[in-house]
Image (cartoon, rainbow, N blue to C red):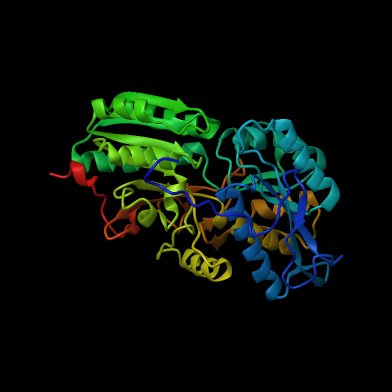
Length: 429
């Protein structure tokens, strides 16, 4: 990587072999070999921050529940045990079939009562839904974002009812971006949009939805480009943004190379407010390693909990406990908090149903109404957890901004905001 950003990748805290091996994470209150344990499977792309974060969030919940006595079912208390497999679905060039084989290996060898998190890539999770139906495997997705997942539940409930979605989908993400960008545009008299996103399903969908909606609001859509995974030179699209500015530059990325995009943006003083999903920039060390070049970047966080929200006490509790357990703050834009909450959803459902029968669990999860790190948790008829701007009514997505003297500030939703959005220093009058 060139000068500027030094991206510090969080290495997984358990050893995961390249060949998609299964790793038992233990059950906190009991030994990993405890035959009485209720197994939860966690198949995801473990070589990336979002996979590591999802594991850490889920494992924290498992340990808390086991320390408190476990899960009451069938007249006895039973511990959870988390079983992990690396699907490698986010790695460039890995065929979907390889990731699906890893998921099936996890199901057949560990026989989980349910799955938390799931693959990061929407394309892979979509392909896995038929497998979940085949094995009646109740799954709570916490990373992949395409609305097509829950649309399958709506279109063929009996077949796909075993799937639930606890994170935002690209529709929710787009709506958050649209509302926040409109507020920023009004504040700074900016109505030009330029999108630069990675060329994957969720990013294409989100960026396209934002552009279409803002066009209807009278915004100029100066461009909407999608770059291949692994891209490291963004000079050409940034030159186009600079020519179109002042603008809001929408960035939808979870790949680590986006750090180079932001380095070039700051170095070239592109007259656009960087605004979107820029996962690596949520690393709390990035201010120092970038020499402050991340200043004014507005970062979308898919769920509360990765960032503590005073209006959601459980998010603050989760954030603090996560930091104590793992020796670091939650990083990235998604995964930790919904995976944490998903374990508690399984606990509530198993206890309400007094059973681990898949159909009984589906019925119980459909009735869940609880407070979690992400806000209020319920599921609609499509098995999507509703998101909004009021944590008393649903789960919450956020925008934070890097501001002097090197702090992340909560700037949206306005109801829970703790600071106002600022333009980059070179755009301030």
